[in-house]
Image (cartoon, rainbow, N blue to C red; front, side, top):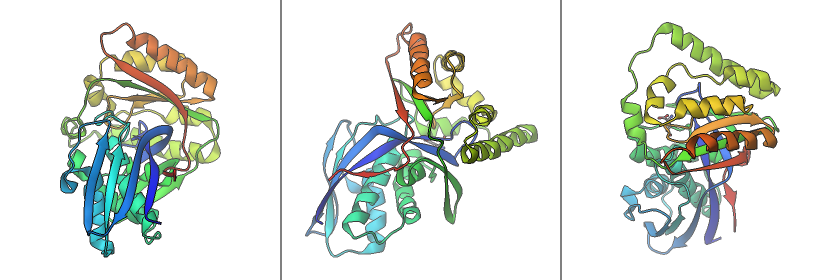
Length: 307
Ligand code: HSE
């Protein structure tokens, strides 16, 4: 195989209570990439459509993760990468992770799969770090593994796959403002009250348990963030109005997607998720901020090979 076309999905990191450790994978929303072998060694980004991003491999997240992989694999040929970007950078649904994970996934396929998914996540973290100025894998892991994932540790990298209840749907609203992950991290406190930590880790534990036993009520009771949301919600106009509307429309929970500005809700059943979408649209359509919304199932496969 000399060429591959892949779909690299958007993802939601943190999932309310699990800052930097939990994430889940979205369906049908993501980037496409074509990667082909070249006689010349190295990584060459030859096409970028959708958004204005650097072509130099060492300045592009997809390039940096690909360089990390070939530095280890040392193939005696190189790769050309075409990026068809649909996820807006800075939207909070894992734009940089989709690029960073997509290139290493595709190259691994062209090399005959020498690396497992955890190793691919490790290489992709090098690209992700370029965008967010710190290594974290909570968007990369769900993009590569699919479904819900928990990053048990980044050094050494250890990722756990968590089951996805069948009837779980996500509703996303993306206000068209940019929140840089590095800035959304800079405003967070360095220390937190013990009582908040206790609440938060109880919620992480019960959410993981609820996902295992398909307990939608417990999912709902666990989707609370007492640590990060109070700080970051200030960066997202009408966050609390959206959250209230979403919960009133029947969502199990609602929170900031990654570092924002996107906001995610989880619901049981597609009908409820669509009602949630209508309710949150009603909040934003009365503002001057452009936005888009979508509803999707949780993608349990992650990356997809298109051809
Ligand atoms: N866990 C990261 C953060 C995800 O919230 O900063 C960034 O997409």
